[in-house]
Amino acid sequence: MRRLPALRVFALCFVVAASALSAPAWADLPEYRVSVANTDVLSHQADAASLRVGRFTAARGADDQATQDAAEAALYLRDALSAELQAAGRLSAQATIDIDGDLRRYQVGPAPSSGINRASVVLHVSLRRDGAALMERDLSIEQVWPHAGTPWISRSLTSDRLLTAMQTLLRQLYSDPEFKRVTAR
Image 1 (cartoon, rainbow, N blue to C red):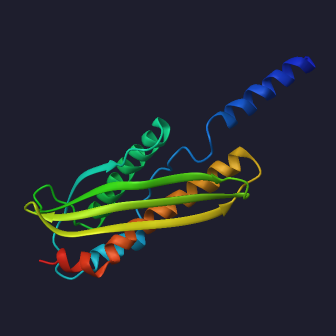
Image 2 (image 1 turned 135 degrees about the horizontal axis):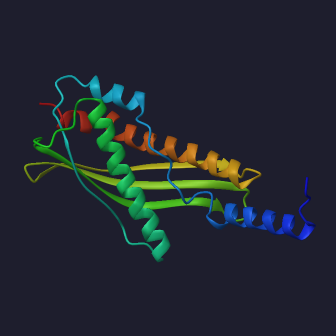
Image 3 (image 1 turned 45 degrees about the vertical axis):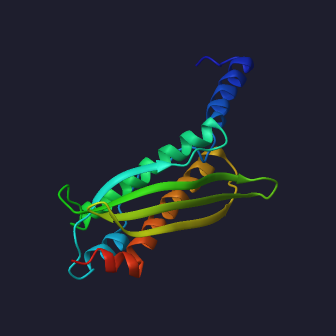
């Protein structure tokens, strides 16, 4: 068995560590999993109308990376909403009620000098029937969790927390009494 010289081992360890640290742990959105609790709320609304998911956009940020991250998060929320409505049997391309969203705040990452990570998300949703406004609402979620020791653990923990935050944000919409009222047939 041949031993690798110490310099090669060091170089290999350096490349692995650099690749793990090059992307921030909070940058990637997790694969969305439909929330059973959310689809339960949606499917148990008596005599509820079908809905159509419209445009989801992001407010322009101070820098290009923040704007790109928010734009990706807006599309993520649109796809998550569509998946949950589909799972509850409430999504239809022929629906007369449209749901649009504008991601007003999307800040995810370490809070400076605090030893914690924070997710702060504000989504403005509007429901319209045949172009007429039915409801406008800001939904928001704030979550905080400790930094993890290694990048891999941190990425996994952040991914789990982001998924939960997005599911909770959508549950706020489905549970809103005004949402239930305007989506009733």
